[in-house]
Length: 124
Picture (cartoon, helix red, strand yellow):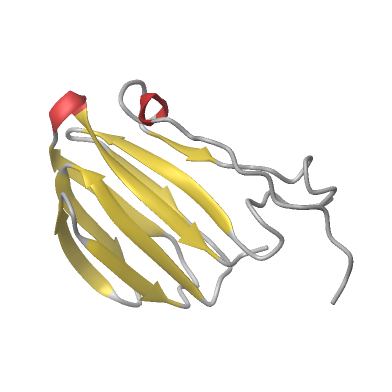
């Protein structure tokens, strides 16, 4: 096994996804881990919040073997050309296998004005 710096334990509070614009909020610890060339939360994982305001859409993309999404808040749908549409609501989790294109996420209803998804993948 290669030598690696310890992965720090950090809190990413809900205030990060409770307000603001539609966006991806990455948990990029690459500087702490001395990883150059890509964003990562650990050497083989990337985690992010995705905030989608009601009525808005955001696209995500990852060159990964799989992607998992946990719905923290809200309801809507996510769609990719390869895997079709998944409808989701608070408490759901869905996993997509390799996806060459992007995934389009749309929020139709949510408290605090927007849905929050926890997104992880193994892109790095």
